[in-house]
Length: 118
Image (cartoon, rainbow, N blue to C red; front, top):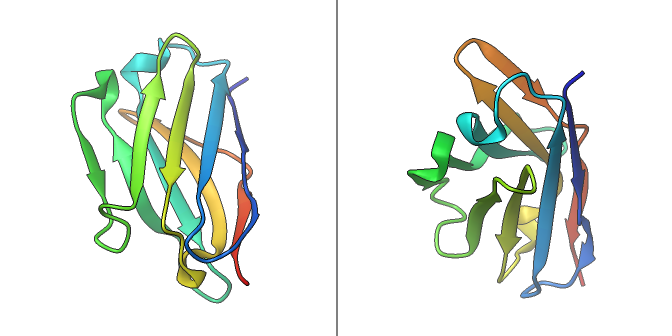
C-alpha cells in the first residue's frame, strides 16, 4: 500500500535550519506523476499548505509566510520530496505533513514535529 514517511523534524533554535524528507512507496503510478506538498498544523490551528511541487516538477508554490525561507524539491529517482527550511521562527513550530495527490487520489504521511524555540 501507499506509504509516505516523513523525517528530519526536531528542536531548533530561532534562526536555525532543518531539512525535512518524505519518502514515498507503494504508488500505483510513477512518483513523478504526483503533486507533492508539505502542510503543517500548529496546536489549535487548522492544517495549512506550506509548499507544493507539481507533477513532473514543473512548478512550485509557497505560503506567503514561508516564501524566501523554505524550498521544496523532489528527487524522482529516490521517490522523495524535501523541504529545506532556513531562518526558522517560533511560529514555524508545528507538525509537518507530506501529501501526495494525483487526480482523485490523495495520501498523507504521519507527520514530523518541528519545534523552534530557544
